[in-house]
Image (cartoon, rainbow, N blue to C red; front, side, top):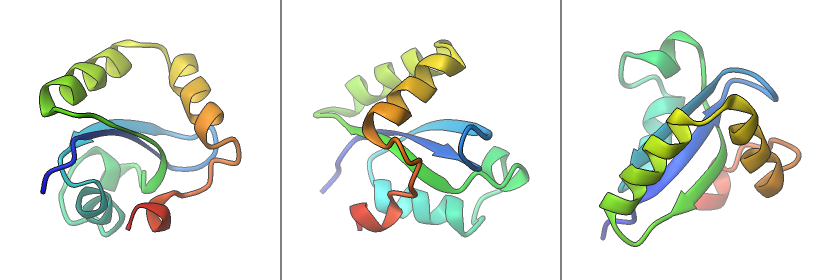
Length: 95
């Protein structure tokens, strides 16, 4: 079953951020953590899941991803700190 989610990964607290969208959050974050695919998260070692948001449809998740990517870094940090003030890696919570 697919569960559309938007997520933010971080390299460290207040470090490099990555915004993504997926229908399989545990699987996609595992790919990032294990550098399965080449790209931004591998290059900059952005592996900690620090924020996510579930959606009913992939269309709404993609819309939210675009909104976040177009928004400021300060807005992303505010979202992270509202959900996860310690910037703890949430990967084990979603398994």
